[in-house]
Amino acid sequence: TTEIYTLSLHDALPILVDLDKAHQQKLLVRVEREDAAEIRNLMTFDPDTAGGVMNTEVMVLEQGLTADQAITLIRKAVEDTEIPYYAYIVDGDEKLLGVLSLRDLLRARPGVFLKSLLRDQTLISAPHSLDREEVARMIGRYNLLALPIVDDGGKLMGVVTHDDVYDIIHEEASEDMLSMVGAGADETVDTPWRKSVAMRLPWLLVNVVNSAFSAWVVSHFEATISQMAILAVLMPIVANQAGNTGQQSLAVMIRQLALESFDRRKAWGAVLRETKIALVNGVILAVLVFAAVALLTGHVALAGIMSLALCLDMLLGATAGASVPLVLKELGRDPAHASSIFLTTLTDSAGFFFFLGLAARSEERRVGKECRSR
Image (cartoon, rainbow, N blue to C red):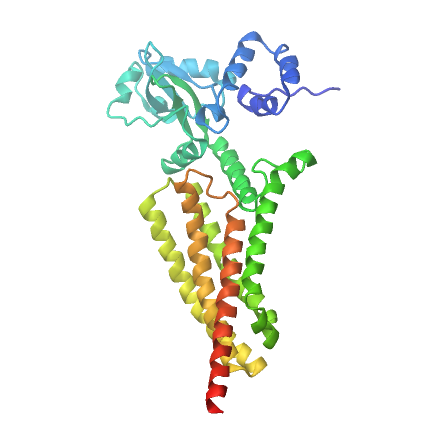
């Protein structure tokens, strides 16, 4: 036997959007005319906006109905809508006036008009053009099961439900993770390999240039490294530790920007917080590294140089990790876009410069003392 599954228009839309135009038309001609028209209308909205993720199968009631009439209508229409968390009350022009929960309706006295139940209600809704991330924040902020979406004139268009928010958060988190390392934001294992190459290659080229800059910094200290070969062994530790510190700050900041609206004062205050954390961690690790390097190499000056370079680079890494997403946000770009690449370049270059620069200065002073003693 063949099992037949039916999908709501809201659930069918993402499947259709992923198909080419020819397959979309083949499927839409097999759908009822009214449903096909509704799907085509939904496909005109930007998928990253409230209109692109809303569900149009909602419970709409006229304000002139009584509570018992409304309950009767809900019983009849419940099979044609998603779970009716709320009933949306409109006027004769379909303008949204208010929202009533099923609990409100069941508790209302028989015969009372719906419009009288809306007194002193603060209506919470979102325009269809609002970014879907902000819609998710609103649902979480007001602890709603669904958020009504309206057009520019205040007419009810649909709702975004809490289960849609889960999908939005999951997709945005995936996009941020991919963007941080320079991969395509919508890339999956099913993406054609040529398209993946085109998306990744530009950022890999940028990374080559950035790495070349780090190598250029190291090349200026070739003489110092040749005199103290152990520097080549120890300097990656400084850069890697600072890179990890920066990645921690970067992840925290991107998560914060994803969960809350951008508040410039609070955001830059968070940068100071990350710097304080890095300072404490840097001092603790610097002491431990000083003890370890001095014990293993017997070179106290080298241990001091590495400890100081480590602490400085960790401070820079944390400050940069928290700042890069904010700078990109201020420039109108995705805060996660290749942030990791820029951060790695900065911590590597600065780490090499701090460590080798301090080592070179220390060596110059040592040679100078020897010359003066002679």
